[in-house]
Each structure stands twice: as structure tokens, then as C-alpha cells.
Length: 81
Image 1 (tube, rainbow, N blue to C red):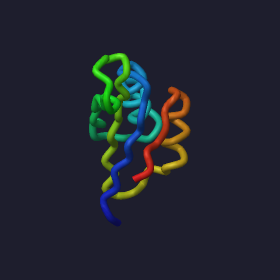
Image 2: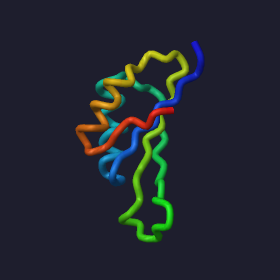
Image 3: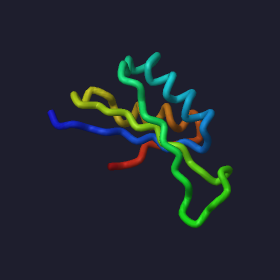
């Protein structure tokens, strides 16, 4: 298996933090996901930032459709790599 990285895009930090917690509960993610602030191009206002939750999946065991469904619950999506 090759290393897989899932990137979930969320509308705000609170949603990203909740998704990170849900990953441990629902998917058994043991490694802390990275939370990354992603300012939209040309936007200086912090309110216009998206948040990324980066999940390392070295064994490729997490189902992309399930991760996308989780992100969707928080008005986000799974970024296609």
C-alpha cells in the first residue's frame, strides 16, 4: 500500500476541531490530524479562511466516501488528491 493523505476542507476552525475529534471516535484515527488554516486567495480577513484537516493514512484503510460524508456533516468536503 502506498501512503495516502486525506484532506478534509471545513468552513471554520470549530468545525475542523470537531471533525478531528470525530475522526478518532468514528474511524479510530490514532495519530492527531493536522489542522491547517487555509486563507482563500486574495482574502486578508480571517473570517474568509477555510480550515483543512489532514489525515495521514499510510495503510489506506480509511474509506474516502465515509470521510467525505463526515466532512459534509460540517458543511465541508473531502478534497480530491
